[in-house]
Image (cartoon, rainbow, N blue to C red; front, side, top):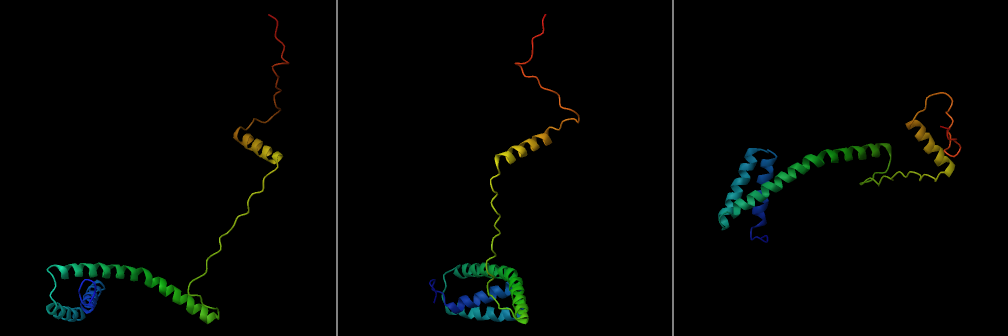
Length: 149
C-alpha cells in the first residue's frame, strides 16, 4: 500500500493505462488493463472521487513522461551515435562530455599617454573633418591690437 492507502498494483495499472493512452498504444492492451483495473477497484473500497483524482494525477504524469521522451530520445540517439563512432575510431568514450574551456581574452595593456592623446585627436579629426588647404592662423586675444576710431 502507498501513503494514500491505495495498493501499488492499482496505481501501476492505472499508470500503464494512462501512459498507453497518451502514447496511443494498442486499444486491446489498454482494454485488458482497464478490466484488470476494474477488478482491483471492485476489491478495494475507495472514497468517492478518489479514483478520478488518481486518474487525473496519472494522466498528468503520463503526459509529462511522453513530452520528456520526445525531447530526450533524439538526444540519446545522438549520444549513442557519437559513442559508436568513437568506438570504431578507437577513442575512449566519455559518458558525459567534459567542460569546454572558456576562452580568455588578454587584458588590454594600458597605453602610454601619448598614444591616448593621439587616439583622441584622431577621433576628433574624424568627427570634424577640415577642408583641405592651409590652416588659418589663430590670433590670441592678447596679441590683437585695438583699431583706432
